[in-house]
Length: 130
Image 1 (cartoon, helix red, strand yellow):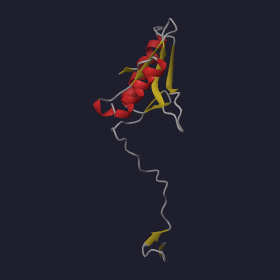
Image 2 (tube, rainbow, N blue to C red):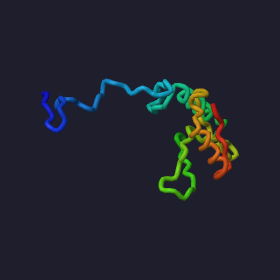
Image 3 (cartoon, rainbow, N blue to C red):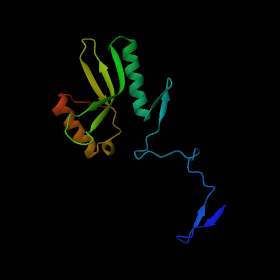
Image 4 (cartoon, one colour):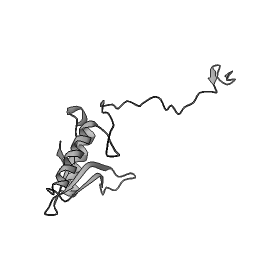
């Protein structure tokens, strides 16, 4: 049903459904969400890295795998920044590595580079970019 809005002379569609289920939102880096073993990953590459990590876990080369680990930076501001690392791999000697899956130079944004420096400064950690 179309009506004329009296305040601004334009047509308004009252039957428009704003929750579009048939349109898939396109990722700005053209990454395709991929499901492996019931877990949804942000890209095919991240899913492949998850399969590699699970393979290492089954072969007992590593102790544990954690996904989407959040590091909150202790800064005095209204909304302190945080960094979400794709995988934290616990080694057999209880040390751990951070794996960050990157698709190329386009995903190395200035924000990512800044958060990487903050991670190094506050936690003395550096992610391995895969």
